[in-house]
Length: 388
Ligand SMILES: [Zn+2]
Image 1 (cartoon, rainbow, N blue to C red):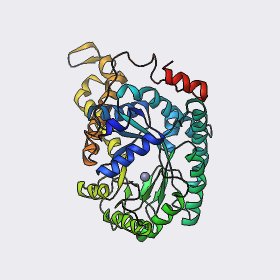
Image 2 (image 1 turned 135 degrees about the vertical axis):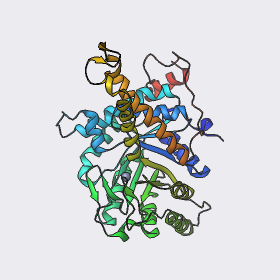
Image 3 (image 1 turned 90 degrees about the horizontal axis):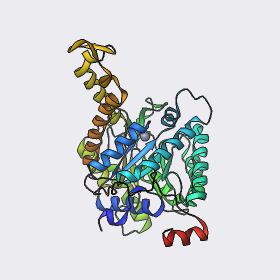
Image 4 (image 1 turned 180 degrees about the vertical axis):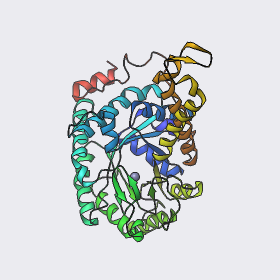
């Protein structure tokens, strides 16, 4: 079956999300997860998915949530509130793009659990109202803790998430480099490779609770773009995790585990391909789209420099107005356009480009504003069935 027959457009959660990621795993492609920190970057990711006919993930980090909330907000709950605001934006606009969008939150270390708790509280509220969670998926990253604690805390949260059919992504082993304030630049190199036993320990524990989870196993990944160092990316190690789990489980599947890839900036196409062949269904992209967004603006400024030095006065005349150059809608759009093109590169590398022909709704066919709230309870279900 082709993907559009299985998964509806809009934000996908629960069974639809499981169907999407199973289709990706079975058909050898992965979905790019773009870190978004603004409505502008979220729109660019969705527009890229529509333009290049692909499912897409929009993910927000703790710092991204704080930024979305506004840097002027110093409240301790700013990260959760900002993450909720971004999710509401995506929920409202995704139906217009006609492609499946997975809403996901990125790394959550132990010290950031209050942020996680805030997002789950929002999921639970949303679930009460609409019968599905606000977010599709969340990541817990307790890889800095001893494995036992890491797995135990994940299992505890997973119990709560499965009630709403929310996906859990967890990390075991360490991703090198520095991201969002967590610095792993000086860690012991062997720790940058997760073992098959570690991965299986996670699978064994979490699969007792539910089947909607994925594992970020470290295979020499580094956040950000660095000059080559001592650690090499070894995506073939992921195949060993799958083989080990297959044997332990006596499974028919060659890839029983959903894996995800972090720190892929600067990886070669072959490395990415090997990772996807070994069961990676999602790859994070942050650094490369950050650069693209900036570069779009940089090139615009270079091109129009002489039109951007004052409100009035440019090479065509000392009294000529420059409003159509410095209006943020002009230069932010240039950044978006560059990001959209970079998103396409990721979709190509992950082989998901063209997998979902966008079902853009007939103009004016959606409810007066974006999403149609789902009715809940027995009366609501009857109303839904009758199309009321
Ligand atoms: Zn990461």
